[in-house]
Length: 68
Image 1: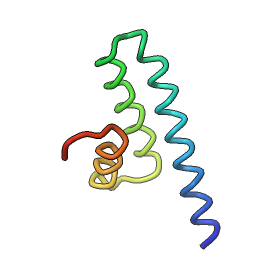
Image 2: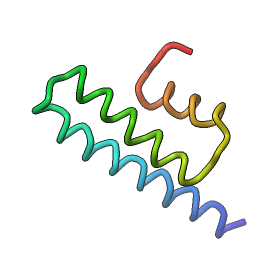
Image 3: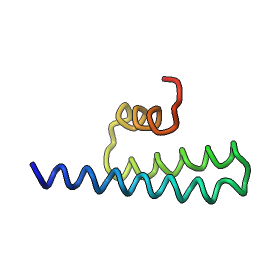
Image 4: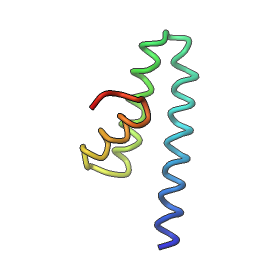
């Protein structure tokens, strides 16, 4: 159980760092393009950990404050 929690925490930290890096790189390309790049980066990252499209969509909605 502890290992599962640790893996989930590591995954969250990794996702956060990827999104943050994508945002930093995206600001020079423009706000909208940067946001799209952030979303693409997060989708690719999430696909490494799950193939559940619903879970990926839920994470995107939460992270980017999107409408369902």
